[in-house]
Image (cartoon, rainbow, N blue to C red; front, side):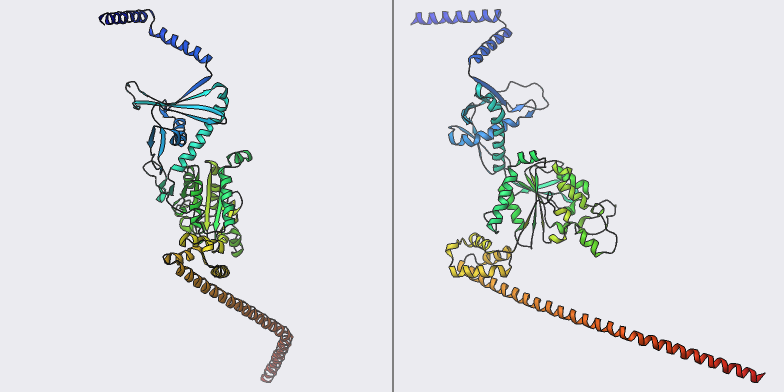
Length: 532
């Protein structure tokens, strides 16, 4: 045993001596070049190539690293054994990721790739204006050389796209509003935001299913139409005009659109915008994949129909480029003469050159009186799709019964359904009015249906009475107009028949006056002769 330890010590001594000789003969630069040469020889005969994706590129964060981390989280949660768990800011979901120095394989169009999460300790830093993390993180992508064109041209773009979808799905949507008086927040942004938690979806929206399906398909085509809009030379945006009576679900429709696409909402309050320049700046500060909303646009600023105003007034017609639509919807100009939003500025906001400074954005205008809006605002290219939010129909009523009472079509008696179908159109009630009736009695479902049916019947009967009274009033008005026309015609005939008599009488009176004047003159001459 003693001889064994003596031999081991001799071997270690020889090894240390040889290492010292090698370090003296071969400097570090030569050793590094030798290792590099062997690596090149190895890679020449190897069928794989490697790509490093570091977390920090110089002084900036590498977006590709974050995208790969999100993309791998979808498959790691299923196949990984040791995972890292994170939750990002403004996110409602947890994200799984690879643990340190762990690997996972992925397949794309028949090509297999291997991802390795490499974490090493960073060397001690000298003085730096921006301190770096203690750990150096990155991903190493191993692919076959024959798959290199496919991976570099398509796979990495696919990874970025999937990562954006995961980020948008996990991240809480935000509701923005422009700051009061155009002021900026602490970060210099003109928008203030709160988490958007509206639960409205197209499944719960009380609307005709066919119209709802048409809107959903249009939204889906828009979201996937980047190539189409680029090929046709159009800005990647779309406009929707929601109009109809109050309480028909225009705001719920906007929330459903945002939840369906995963977009943020920018609620633009025009009364807080001073001029067209400020309006453009607000547009520039909006992000892509967002919905820009102007609710009750006919009440925000004066956008009345120019044709009606020109026909109604006797003055000269004004061009919409000169319209002084000041804040608050009033007329006339502001004290400073230019502190106003014009219709021209709003048109450029929705369809001008400034509207294409971002991509994948939707403009939504709502109004209760579409006839008050100027036709220039409603044409295609600005408001591409006009959606009429009507009174509650029978298909919409069934959706409300399912939402509030958990009633399907087969759960109600056929006679009751038939009565509801007969009176709901004549009642002309909004989904908001019907929802209120159901909410009050949601604990007693049968009573809710009975009270709803009674309410619909009362409203339908009232509408029929108003329609009949209105018809009689119209007929009475027509008769009165006919009587007035007959009286006017009789007066004209009387005036025409009396006019010759009046002229003859005037001539006779004039002749009598002339005869009396002549007789007076003769009498005056006789008296003068007598005096003489």
